[in-house]
Structures are given as C-alpha cells and as structure tokens.
Amino acid sequence: MNEVNLIIIGAGPGGYETAVKAAKAGLKTVIIEKAALGGTCLNAGCIPTKCLCHSAEVHDEVLAAGYADAAVDIAALVSRKDSVVDKLRQGVAMLMKMPSITLVEGEARFVDAHTVAVRKADGEEEQFVAPNVIIATGSVTKFLPIPGAHAQGVITSTEALNLTTLPKRLCIIGGGVIGMEFASIFRSFGVEVEVVEFMKEILPAFDRDIAKRLRTSLKKRGIGFHVGAAAKAIYEGEPMRVEYEEKGKLQSLECDLVLMAVGRGANLEAINLDDIGVAYTRRGITVDQDMQTNVSGVYAIGDVNGLCQLAHAATFQGYCALHHILHSVSDTAIDDCENPYHAALSVIPAAVFTTPEVAMVGQTEEQLAEAGTEYKALKSFYRANGKALSMDADDGLVKILVAPNGKILGAHILGAHASDLIHEVTVLMRQGGTIHDIAHTVHAHPSLSEILLAAAEA
Image (cartoon, rainbow, N blue to C red):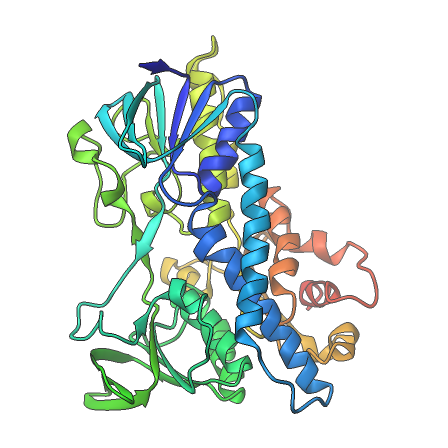
C-alpha cells in the first residue's frame, strides 16, 4: 500500500496541470492514466483540431492569393498534426517527471473512498491511499439513438482527425462546436458539406445573432444547412443516405461519409462511482463550488462533472479543488479563506475555430431577456476596421452587452482572431470593470482590438 497526499485519476489538462501545481505546493501526488497523456484535448480534441483549422486557413489564403490549383495532401496534414500532438505529449511527460509526482499507467478503480487500485498492462495491480482524490476522467462521444448510428461509414471526431483520404461529400449530424469546426475545415479542403442540426440554430449555447451570422458566412462558403431538422436514420451504401425530418417532412441526403457530432458526455463508466457512493446524474458527477462531491475528500473536475466542457475550465476547476484541499490540511479554516477560483470560474470564455472564428464570454442576449435584465447591445463591425480590411477579413462584428451602469454582462465576437480578442473583455469582467474602461483605454492602430474600442464608444 502506497500512501500519498493526493491521487488524480486522469491525465488530461485538468489532471496534469493540477498535479504540477500540487507538487509545487509540496503534495506527494499520484496521477493515473489508462490511455495517452493529455487526455481528449491533446490527443483527439482541441490541439489536433486546431492543427487542421490552421492548415485549412493557410489553404484558404493560398487560394485567395490566386493559386487555384493548390491541392490538399490530407495525409501530410494529418502527419503534421500528429507531430504537433507528439511534441506536446512529450512535454506533458516531462512535467510528470517532476519531484513529488508519480505517473502510473493503467486502469483505476476505487477500493474505498480514499484507496485506489490500478491495474497495469501486465495485469499487476498496485494500490494507493490518500486523504484526497480528484476524478478527472473526461468525456466520451455521444451517439444518437437512431438506426444506423454505428453503421460503417459513420465516424466520430476522433476518426475525422485521422482521415488519410477526403470524401467528396460529408454529412455532419450536429451543429455544435465540434460540427461547425469540422464543417469549416472540410469545406476549406474542397469537400461538399451538409449539416443536419436538431435545434433551430447552430451553436445553441452561443448568442443567437452571432450564430445566425456565422451560419450565413459558412453558407456563402458553400456549406449546406438543415436546421430544426431531426436525423432519423443512417443507411449504409455507396452512396450513404441520411434520413431526417424537417418542417414535418421526411427527407434525405446522400453522402460518402457521416460525421456524428452531437456532443460529448461525462465519462462516468470509467470509474466505479457507485461502490463508494459518489452522487451523479446523467449530466455528470455532482459537485459543490469547490468541486467536492458528496463524499468528503473526493473531488471531480472537467468534463466528468458536466459543468463546462472546456479544457481551460477543467484546469481551473482543478486549481479550485486543490485550493480547497490545501486549506483543508492547513491551520486556517476554510470559511476564512475565500477560494479565489470561485470568481475565476464565473467568467469563462469560449471559442469556435471556424472561418470566421466565434468567441464569447458572459451572458447572451437570450439569457438576459429571459431573466428580465436591462441591457444595451453595443456593436461595431470588422468592415470599418483598417487592419481587418488589410487582412481581407472584413466579415465580422463585435457585440458587447452592458448594464445601465456600464457593467459588462457579456461579449460576443464573430471574425478573425475572435479567440484572442475576447480576452480583453474577459479580464475586464473578471476585475469588475466597465465598458468605460475600454472606451478610455488607448488601443494600438491599426489593430483588430480597435473594433472593441469602437463598440465601447458606440
């Protein structure tokens, strides 16, 4: 039996970043991973997808420069993606060699609430005991419960990242973040793309105005959309056929490949939660504001708790749990030590790496209207910005939602580098700043950040 201070189950961003921080704080930490270091984000999510997003963007720029015969070597692009992932995975492996961190490869299970057994590849089992355990087992791909959902020719985002040949026609079921990023990528690569989305608009969690504008931009690029449409069945064959119901009528479309992109769900089956009485719902493990479950000393962070399926959220949730753990073992009462990560986790930016990009932070117009909150929407457009025009990126806008006292309630950006621009507003919201702080701050010229300034001055 190996006694340590902290056990972390899962070496995704939340797990390994928290392990590093715990080790620096002096905790003897064991981190357990049964697959590849870096979790979904590094191996089959954020990073590899962004590699292909970059390749798609470069290809678009080459075509815009007049090289109409530029071919796409998808095998070479996948190879580049793999090399980037491998380099980052090696970096994580180096971090796990820090003093006070022990990486154990294998499948974990609870013996009791504070004892975890790990079965390794050779069948050997090793047990670890600690006063605190963090569950960070991530998420798994969801599938629609329809005929043909697992048929040959139906792939998930994981397989889409490793295609060595491009289909002529691709049907994407799901208009969320995953679906939209792949729609944008494959369209840039010359694939005919059709999207079937059950909700009335793509990106249901985003501001509806922004989502509609993105759909318009993507339609101009040749992507077909069927919104408010329910996929009913998938039929194998050459070609494949996707049957869906739209406006009360049963319709179908033909394609060569189907991408199932209807989201991800908490990976609850990765660990035997019932044996130790950890409470959970279909959405994920139930936690309090410190990420602690109903079992004292057992925490859950990242996708597995269902609060926010973003890698950066998982990391800060891990920090939040660790802060609680550190003060639990100190001489200072928890009530006397406000957890700084509570406020940090209330302002989380999100981005979609389509062309053009989308980013948001805070509340949407729909949420404010539903709550009866008084607000004003301040807008500015990329087409009026010199830097955007010089970049041939005039498609986009900035929308900042503010209260009568100037407090920023939310911000939504569609356009080039939206994922970078959103952080000016995020930092300001985190610090309790107002729209006047943006308006009274000098912004470099010419720069895309001036679009934020223009909105603030609107």
